[in-house]
Amino acid sequence: MDYLLQHENDQFSIYDHHVRLLCELQKLFVDFGKKYRKTVANYIPKKKSVSTFDTKLTYKSVLADSVTSFLDFGTSFENYGAELLKSVITPLKSEYDRERKVADKVIADYARHSNHREREKKRLEDTWRAHVNALKEKQKAETVSTLAQSDPNISQEERLKAQSNLSIKNDAFVATQQTYAAEMREFNDNQRHYFTHSLCTLIAELEMLDRQRSKMTQELLLKCSDLSESLSKQLSDSAQSLRNTVSRIDPEADCRAVLEARKTDYHFPVDLPFLNLAQCTQATLENQSALVNLMLGTSNGFAAKGNAEKVSKGIHNLFGKSKTQTSDGNVLQTPFIAGIGYKPVKETDMTVIQLNDRIKTLKDNLDKVTRAITATQRLLDSYVQNPSLGNQRESEETIAKLQRQTFSLSELISKLESRYTSMGGDKALADAQSSLECTNPYAISNPTDKPLRPTSMPKRDTLSESSADELDSDVDDSGVSASQGFSSYVGQATLEYDCEGSVLQLCPELESPR
Picture 1 (spheres, helix red, strand yellow):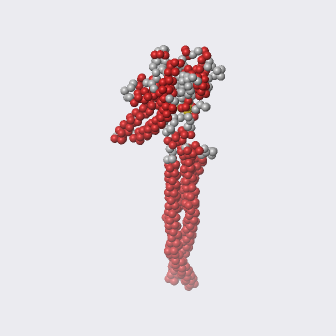
Picture 2 (cartoon, one colour):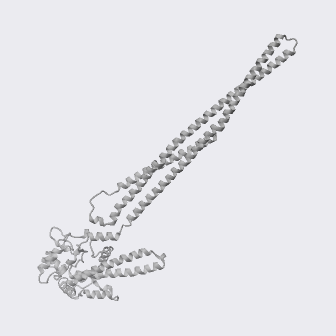
């Protein structure tokens, strides 16, 4: 029984250890969930009016919606901790307290029965010693009586006295014998009852206690497992929700939305024309409109040659005052007179010469993109045959990007060519170049590569000639003056055509007030 009680005590130690472990885990889950949710809540964007443009941006809406999934993570841990306390820890504590009371009662009953048995044992031992002493006294009295009867020198009175003492001792012995026999029977009965009933009852109670504890613990730990599975499912659902939310991010759609929202009619600045100051009179140097006419030519495609005043006024209104022009009215403070070559420009405000240059530049860029597609396609074919050579997916994305650039460039070229045709086409270009050669020949050719005599400078190729040259692969690119100095165009166009759009647009910070 002592071994069983020691085993029960060990079981309670394990039970208590497990309950304290679950309590610490529950506290850890709740604290983590609260801290996690509070941390996420601190990064939730403050509510403000949402514009129609914001609703079109998948990246922005996804970041806002993803916060919900992160909050669900923290809430799941908090709910798990609360349910663990309610469904597992509290019943475990209650069961532990109940079993502790039952075990204490069993220990107390066992101690009571043991003490009673010890008292009966001690009383029986005392009775036995009294019975043994009575036997010794009786034997002593018998010896004295026998000596008295056999000794003739002892008087009759002494003999009677010895005989009487023997009778008393014999009666005392018989009395102690009867008492011992009665107490022995009672001790045996109690001992049989102790081992056959009391101890069995206590052992049965301990056995029932162990059985109930095992069953209860098993059920609660299975409940704990169910809660863990529920937590895992909630976390999995939150992760899947986050995955579904993030999958809505569409960078191409966002780029289209941004370009569409920031769409303007402006193109990047035209080339800065060369201003031949040697041919400028004092009156021309003091007149911004005259300088503009000298730079661009009087025949610019907006008006007839004879209406110079209207032409200069239109150009002046087009470009306005340069940002770098000082308030003292000195137009020679900057080479960007009236903002030409620096400010963005509308398609309808470009001269026929500028349109021709822009079309050539864009066609050069289109040719480069086309060659890049061909080269990338060869790489993709190699990757398909041997995947170890490179990333096939990246090559496919690169080709798709270059194809989008091709569509945008082709559309823009078609639009500019339509504008070019509406302004008179090649004839208007030839007239404008002839007019500009008379007033500012350096605006046609690079002054560092040609003589100073205007008559020796060749004319710029027409649109039809440039198109023919571009289709002829044997034409030397170095002989096409329009393709020189346009690396900035190519870089700008490449940057702008990374996203799909019908028109080449400028960033808002480059847009000039109309």
